[in-house]
Length: 80
Image: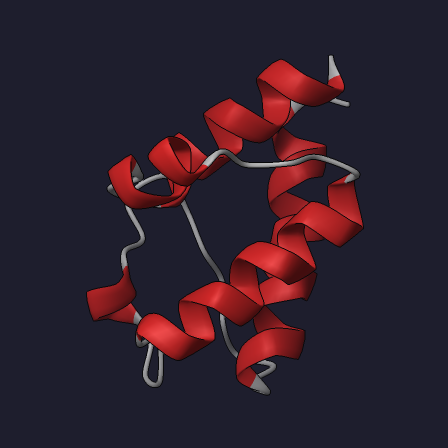
């Protein structure tokens, strides 16, 4: 799975979690960019991403992610 495929699937996860079909995430997207992305929704998002990609984030990874690009880096390292 390449980076473009991960972003394609990740966009669908974000749209489902935040119930907003207009969301398109990129490398620099952060919680500041998406309405409703608070700490509770972050937990739901992480769970949905783990389920979609069959990956597991460590607590350290979850708290250190600064943007969606870093999330994709982690996913890419686990699905390659």
